[in-house]
Image 1 (cartoon, rainbow, N blue to C red):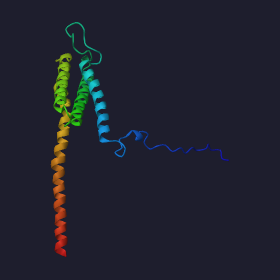
Image 2 (image 1 turned 180 degrees about the horizontal axis):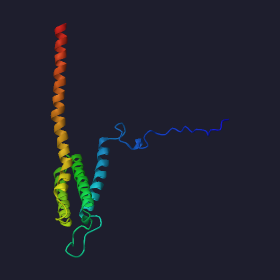
Image 3 (image 1 turned 180 degrees about the vertical axis):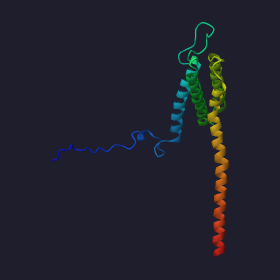
Image 4 (image 1 turned 90 degrees about the horizontal axis):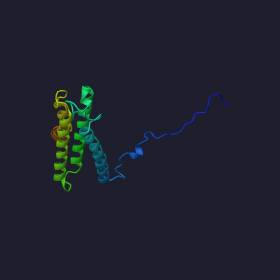
Length: 181
């Protein structure tokens, strides 16, 4: 016997969450869509509530009554406001994308647009105008939509241009092969 302790060789899964991941063999796209809708709706509800009721509440008295207490910490409030707006906007994009061409799609668009307007109105109401520039939350709200459009156009135009180049190269190779025969 040796003086060294016995080494255990237990085999662990290389990914502890592997069994929770989407598996196209066993999971249907419909089930995945439903899970995503539940998760995104939960995130949207939390971010909406946080924007309407900011952390720390609002001043109850004085000339700052109705304004967010947290806004007195300017940088921290900017981080909160931009991050929260980005999260809500992303959730709205995912909800409208996952319900596209479903029954009541137009109504879902109207409801989500109204929710975003309500959110913006509430944020505008509780945020002191002298301490926050609203262009940052507006930019944050538009980022998911701009990124989605950019990705769409990139895929449509840049990828199709590459496919055309590949196709014309293949045709040229076929012609060269036929000419050589």
